[in-house]
Image (cartoon, rainbow, N blue to C red):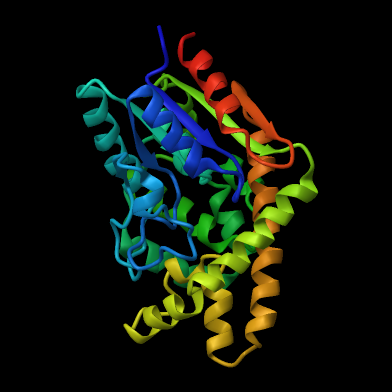
Length: 308
């Protein structure tokens, strides 16, 4: 039976957007973005969100769906993107999931459920963490979730507090929940293509060129507009690479040239993390470009994968 979904992923600046459109045009598909920053409105340049021209008439979903001051979560993505995918399938079209946010992709394909949150409990145990410190919190955590206590670092406040929040909200440890989730069959069958370059230096050159292009297209003005609208520089969206550094330059904390250099460096580091994430995955078909992307060849590879 052919896969229900096509996934096109890989590190930043590898041509995922164009290949997704090419595949959609050839296979009768629609694109579902799996980029954790392209879903924020008013952040098109710094996230390399596809333009109308780049979309070439193909429907794109999960773009510009949240305000930049919202704290969008992976659980919300799974719920909303899952509804989009189900609708595309019901209409007889092919959902093509395109993006580099691995957690979003994995969670969508698995249909992973997320434990409910409790702001009150989160606030309570966050305050307790600040009072007693990470080591004591891990000792307390070990009483009901020894595996998590062993796995987490004492400085990882967010995950430690989340473990307490989940347990006292549900009576079930987060470790047990994760183990139960792994036993469930995946929500969707898929074929996954990951893009990169044969030579790492070529990838880094592409990343550096993309950053220069973003500033030529107006990234500085885009960030300034967000700040002038009152979006906090502490908002989740403003922590994205490109926005955080540009905002710092606009506040006078560094020069814009220094910010650009930092964005390039952090983008390269992010690409390395994306590659590390993907290298641990099974059932991924890698397409490694030489000096430039070869979209016709990649499209033939995808067609063969979708027929298996």
